[in-house]
Image (tube, rainbow, N blue to C red):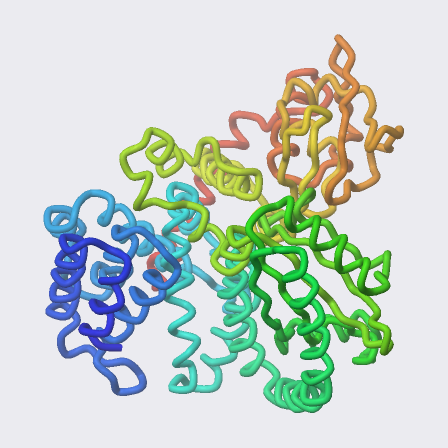
Length: 519
């Protein structure tokens, strides 16, 4: 990647002053990275230039792109945050600082197979950096995506470590942000290093099957185009090929029988409005026999990462099974680019909502409520609370579900969460006074996990109902923390004595000091 390529690409998206500012940032980074080389032997500046190119492609605001160019200067050169702030502004310095803190947090790992840093200080840095401004993690994703594309230049042990971390942490984080294209690119690259033999085998198998299916699918596409034209729709239609890693995961669910996977190829129909999506669905079901169990309405009930689309699988008169996806242009843009497509920073920069969401993440959509939860966990860690590694993995990196209140408010919880987790997420007082639950109109047990799309009603009583047994019926650190506090207030469990707290604090400081001396 060269300076001129990035600037020419940027000219399509930013005004003249912004492009000049980008050129200034590139010159600044180039001067500080002078003499540094990548493992490939290329000048180091090719990396931040590639990161910036990714961010431009994802539609990010100019401040994020500038921070992408500068993201390694403070960590790897003599550049300072003060100097960056003076030259490029507070927001850019804030983002560069956040990316640096994430890198420092990762440097605190003891076990290279685990992404989670082992010290509270490092973990706090990670959580705070991501929680304060989600653009920090988007820059890290751009950084990781380019590093994965040049992984062949690293030694085999580093390839394995970086690929596994990408598959277990960065790809799920991209998915959490709705960035489907980035998730898929990361998964494909990581899988090709972690299991190259299986990757090549599935790749070859996929090519054979696609060769046989492409012509048949072309006939179905022509039929659909003719029918939608006849009804006067404005639409685009294109094919989607299942990724190798998605195929690998799906095969595990069907005992390795690829004939049981119907969506190796799918047709994607993009229309102008949500209403058109449902009209097209009706037309398709009039043309072909739908497989009722495989109709998915992700428009009415989006996936927890915000993804929206209608999915249906149909059987043609020639007995061909075809998956069809129907969505609007906005839905398609979000499915490809996620948060980068939905948060138009460059358009909202002067609005109150932008400032509020940027610093406090207030008013975030339901699929991004986990960012608020990350901030809360960081605050509790700073206050000395013990949170286990397993608990953090659930809170930060586990799969998510959406559940709804009877009024239609959406709440984002980790997969496997219990009704009490929902109650405490709504409000700690509601949790404390919970008497029973109704889920989808039916009585629901306290120890039965919730499912994506459930409507949860909390029945309360005036007097506190909290019991010690409830500690076994919550899984989120938020609910556990609130419940323990209430149980102590009610005298149902003992609080940690002041002396014990002092001893624990001294021990944690001593461990932190020892770790610093080991570095």
